[in-house]
Length: 434
Image 1 (cartoon, one colour):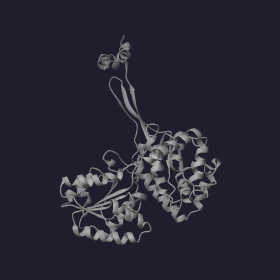
Image 2: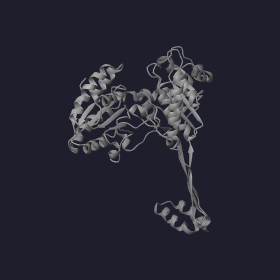
Image 3: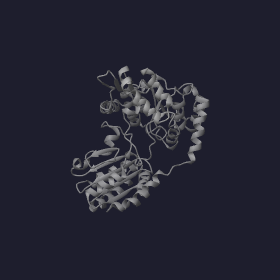
Image 4: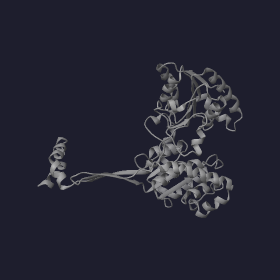
C-alpha cells in the first residue's frame, strides 16, 4: 500500500499537487440523464414511481402504502436498542443542540430621527426534507447524519421536517435510525432512497408534501439530484468525497496520525488523507504505521485504495511553509497536530473544521463535540461553510419610510432611476411629492 510522498519547498511546488488533486473532481456525467429521468418520473407519477424504484433496488415486496413509517414504530424503537446507546445518543444530541443554539440570528431594526425604520426579519423556512443514506443495506445506520442535519433545522425554528431513508430488504428501517428520530422528536419518516427520495422531497407526492430546503449526504445519484434541483429548492451543498489534512510537527505521535488519516481513508476510495510535516522522521514512521494499521481494518481494502490514489505525506521545510500549503489544500477537515496549535490558528484561512492539538481527533467532531460535521469538500471551503442554522433560515429586508423621507430624497431617487432608463420607477416616487 504505497502512499504518495511529496515535497513542498516553495510556492511553485503547489501547481503539480493541485493538478493531481483536481482529478478527484472528475464528474460522473453518465448519471446526469438517469437522474433527470428519475426526477421527472417522480414528479409526474408520485408514489407509484417511488414504489417502482424501491422494489427494484431495495425491497422487492414494497408497495406505495408502506411509504410512510408508522409513528408507533418510531417510538417503539427506543426499546429495541440498548439503553446505554440511548444515553449516548441523548448526550450527543444535547451537545450538538447546545452548539447550534449559539448560531441563531435575531431580527433587527434601526430607526432614524425622521421616523424611518429599516431592518432585517429572520424567519425559518416552512418545511425541510432530510435524506439519510441506508449504509450497507441498512446495517450501518448513519445516525450522525440524521442528528447533524435535523438539529440546525430545529434550532432555526423549522416546524415541518420530513426524513427519508431507503428501507432494508425486509421493508424496515434500522431501529437506530428510528430511535434517533424519536429522540429528536421527528415523527415524519418515509421509506425512500437515492434520487427518487430527493425528487419526492422536492416535488412532493400523494403521500409526501414538498419541501423548501433539502439536506443530507448521499451517493452520486443523490448528489446529482440535488445539483439538478438548484434554483427550484434550497440545498445544503453538493459535497464530494471526504478529506483530511493534518499539519504535524515533531511532537506528534505517528500512531495517532496514521489512525487519523485512516479515519477518512476508510470512507471511500476517493477520500483524500494528507499529512504535511517538516519532520522527516515523523513522515517515515507514519508511513510504516499506515501500512500496519490499514491491514488490521475491516474496511482496509477501501482505505488502502484511498491512500494509494489520494493519500500523501508532504514534507515541508518549516511549519510556516506547512501553513501555506494547508491554506492551498483548503481541506474539509484540518488537524493541527502540533505542540502549540493556538499559535498558528490565526494563519489558517481555509478549513471546514479545525481540530486543535494532539487530543482532538476528527471523529470527535463527527459524532459528539457539537459543531456540525456536514462540511464543504474539494476546496470549496475557500468560499463556503459548515451546515448551520442559517441554511434553514431566510432573511427579509424591511423598509418603512415616512412622507418626510420621500419629500427629502425623492428627487435623488428619481434621478438614479432615470439614469438607468426606468421612468416608471422615477414617477413612482415623484407622484408622492405632488
